[in-house]
Amino acid sequence: MSGAEVVPFELERMFLGDTPPLFLLEIVFRTAVIFLWLVFLLRVTGKRGLAQLSPLELAIVIALGSAAGDPLFYPEVPLLHAMLVLGLVVGLQRFLSFLVIRNERVETFIEGLPVELVRDGMLFPQALHLANLSREDLFERLRVEGVRQLGEVQRVYFEQDGNLSVFLQVQNAPPGLPIVPPWDLEPPPSVLAGALVAGPVACTHCGAVLLTAPPPLEPLPPCPRCSRDTWTPATTDPLGERKRSGE
Ligand SMILES: [Zn+2]
Image (cartoon, rainbow, N blue to C red; front, side, top):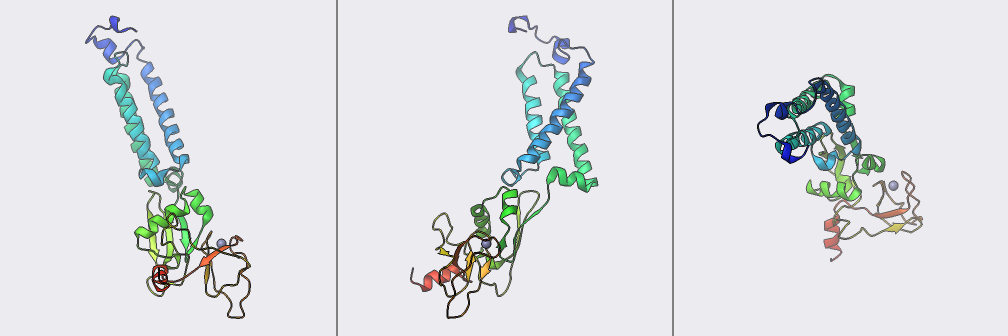
């Protein structure tokens, strides 16, 4: 349809276009398919940590935005079609929300599960990967909570809405992997397996802590938890340690 043929305020074109009324039923089908596909795609991208919206919420924003835009200025997009799509998207969203509340399996599928990232100062590298978070991202978010080294952390859960729940070791935190100063500014000093070191060391990959044997010193083994071979000195207070060593 070219612009020259448009007769302004022609009601049939505005509301129905050239389509037969049964096409409205096809729109119901199309909208349901696309909206559910959108929810699914947003779910598998796993970007919830950055978006701060659930896949369902993000899907409704995208679907409403695109369905609301076209009829505003394309004369060949009938209003009834757009109104039907908008109403359906809202209806589908309410229906899915209802299912999420009612049914745990639907909830798990659409919103995902909380993921345990840290337990007793040790990281779960697989879980980090699953949550689409780098170690530096996690450390940054823990520093915001005032954490200096992982021994201070009892549990960290990556929640379904993308937030972290952090449970700290309230008293007598054991030494752990230092996360200050930020690794992006200054990587922690590394000690390779085989070296002779006095004092506790933490695995830079998984945070496991090894208390070294008393003298005579024995060579450091690879990490018993993740079998990597890079350690770093572990203290209860990495910043205080730096002060004492005169930096
Ligand atoms: Zn390790």
